[in-house]
Image (cartoon, one colour):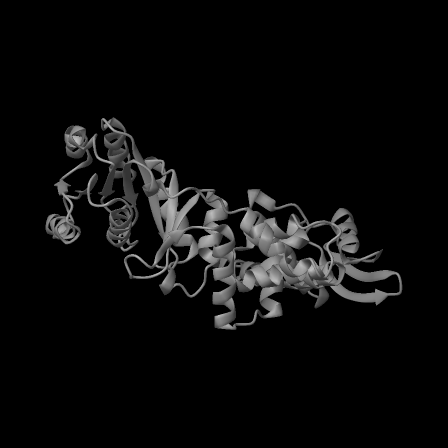
Length: 390
């Protein structure tokens, strides 16, 4: 084993020297703060023997470790069985994970000392539920001359700047198809948009269309909504059937279209997209993203909706969300403009045009209501690995 002492201006400088001299597998033995920097003792294997007989790296490493242990005991290295090799490999893997956690903690502690305002911003964004990659993107964009006063809002403003918004599509003439997974709130959103149109324009020129051949009661649901609102409603079994009859709606001011729920299969979405594009009237597509689900689920909804080429999205079920960080992260990653914010079940009151600052403010409000603190150790594991790699 090779042990060496390194002197650095800070921990990042010391870690850079260690990687350059001893490699990425070096082990930190001790650290000590000095007047002008840090002192770090690190170690690595001197010259690991090459694997015999074409063995795997893990097997060679396990055999090397066994030989070192036996030599230290003053005996010849015994034969190592396959089960013993596997056990030693697991021990080495566990040891490596422990060392990686320690390095992550060291990197985070060093970062909080060098960049306390940026570290606080990462902590606050994490408390909002913002994903790690988005939080790092925001803090990396903070100005170099960041002060304690500007740091209180700068990261929130940068987060809002990364969220695109657009004009509500139902505010202008045309056809609008609502896209979303089961439970995303398509029918409720359709009712809200329809009633909003009726209040502003009257019941002339509005038509409701349902495309669904599998949802039980879809036809009756469409007829009931049409009767309730006093507007014509139609049901078609498929997108192709709608496209064949769509010419009858060319004179309508607004056609609201409820579509089948998105599934994991790409073919139905592609077929629906082809049908909508083949209709004799332009059809906008709006994806519904429920704020009540996690970021990973929202990212999957974006993937499923990709063949339909949605032009905008609406955030639904906001009243059921415990955190807004997931939906904000998805909006930043996906770049899809937001048109509406649906706050609750009330048809007219709970629908408003989206504003980026409003979305971020809602995230802050929910985080404060939850009042859940972020464990410093969790922050170290969350960001320390990336900081160490950087």
